[in-house]
Image 1 (cartoon, rainbow, N blue to C red):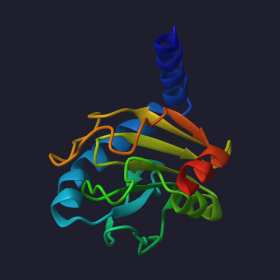
Image 2 (cartoon, helix red, strand yellow):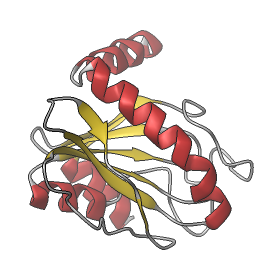
Image 3 (cartoon, helix red, strand yellow):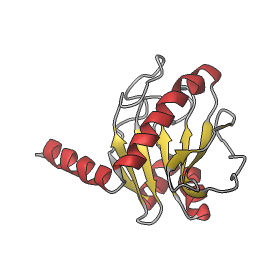
Image 4 (cartoon, rainbow, N blue to C red):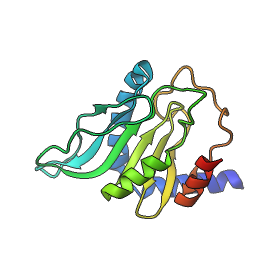
Length: 170
């Protein structure tokens, strides 16, 4: 029964984002996972509408091992979503979850965002509803060959902002 609930939740969570947003997030972040693992750096950027009202991924910026600051925005674009990777798998860094900073940065910018993890999860950070949820789980995106499932305990399919704060405080 719990499995059925989880599958229904994931389906409804994915439906909250447009198919175009999910498709561009998967394509963009899939392409950045390899370089992110190889260089052990985060890559970040924005999804935006261009002057032709097309949803596009703006060029990614390279960050460091645990953060990334986008160098933009570019003129002529309406930013709607952030995106970033979490670098390579590291037993010392809980990279399978969006961080509190990930959430709070998006919230301060007034947008939502996507986060890709070394385990291949795709998260959606919904600052409007105060929810962080998996669009798809382990292996949905390219996975770091060094990744080991379970090192950080059980990862739920969604968290409220308050639950995220508690998770990171532990």
